[in-house]
Length: 159
Image (cartoon, rainbow, N blue to C red; front, side, top):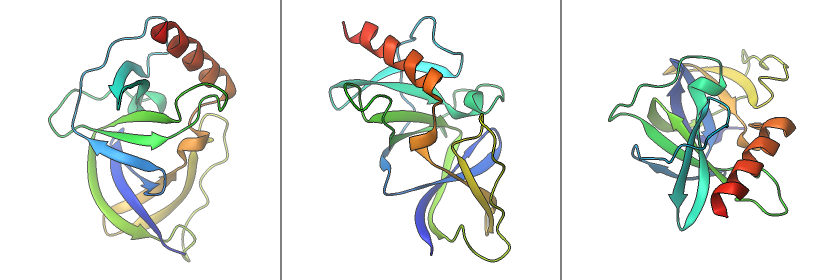
């Protein structure tokens, strides 16, 4: 069944996230660095009165950090770090947003993706008019250890 998804680029690859978890798409914005966080965390930014993490997806994928350009976008996505006390949104710093399109990740010829711990948030891959696009599930974005680190830094920043 096709999913209405935002198609975006990071690490020079194409990804898609279902609109059901995308809160909004923002132009590039400033963030405040969060010391001692992993290098893929750009920092914290204020979103609707709450500080939330800004994650460089290219860095999270192990690629070089995205250079700051006018084409960069921030995808604010639902992504609980700790359901008890922390924000349910995270900002994803991406190279660009390509399109909004219905994508069928279960279509004939699609690939289920590779099941690895570091790629736990990556789903199936399908060929589209833009090229090969891989589904990203923000709910699986952070490992328990990464979520714990971010949760700790968010509490420190909010204090």
